[in-house]
Image 1 (cartoon, one colour):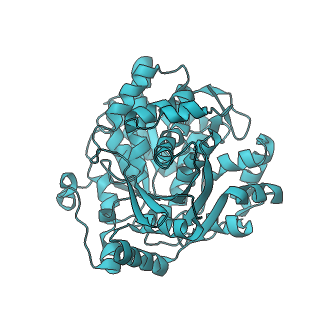
Image 2: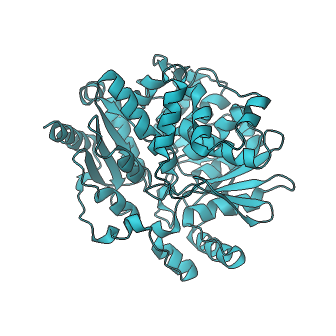
Length: 466
């Protein structure tokens, strides 16, 4: 399996090289050179498999010859060994034809654990084989950072620097990052938005000498391995509802477009996915695009669902590349113009193609709170603000006879203020996090400038090497 950049100017790489590179040298994102697919009998053979084994089966064609099948099964088994539900990704019915798949049973209570625990294992395996060290630089709107830190803490071959927007995550989200005091972990509170954090990470990668000197790698969903490791839970859900003989639809709360891109990837592999529904908060650039071909940046406004407070959805570039018939030159031109003008000019034909599969629904804070409250009253189900938006999108677009599965992306205890306001219930943190608010915090506040971040990354690497 080889991987190519959406902008066409970077060399094709193997899976292991893409894992370590993260962002392509030309600023693009890596995608498989050709899409793997499973036959009817291969899909059927996955039914009933334990989740770690299913994950290894689905990941195998993306990994190619880089990691043998037995090793991949072992890495996936280790990745999911610490999850607190035997099914790993349990399914719950909340309404007629509407189901929830819970993706928050990992160590940091968010769906990011589903991929990040696998990435931690993959990094360790590949770096040990190569006797190498990398520096992971990542941006988080709330959950990616803690998941990356938990997956990589204490690993001698990894230095980890995570940027989060100061004051724009929930306190639980922040403390899950800043109370991890392992020597290889550095947290930076950036005086800006998540989009600023994301741009600063890309600026580090765009500086070729700095990237080479620091041996930079990424754990954000710009890293293809993150997307690949999220595909299995869509497969698991679909198989449970009768795939490959029966279609299924998915509703996903998303800001950066990575989670729903994994569902789209499953469809490219032959899974019978009928419809993909985007759930947005008040920062609704994806829903505006789907409803009116309006991909125009606006100011990022803080919301009850901070992990979706995003106006630059990085993973949309991968879908755009495909919508353009894999025209890398056109993709690069549109993305460059978008970053300079704040408006993405998606051709009408490409937009119409996207509309055939995708729909979007946006809820403001009042609508989100109402959804949390109503869902709890009607179904006795407690959904965090992100998951509630996904469930609302699923309800809006479900079709008779086609199961609609909404992704529950975070544990409600991560957002206690929102839950109390909507339902009067203060969800308890699991036992392993019950002392979170008494733990020592360690982080550094930096301005939203490339030089400040590069200096902090360099200091972290030197400190970890000492």
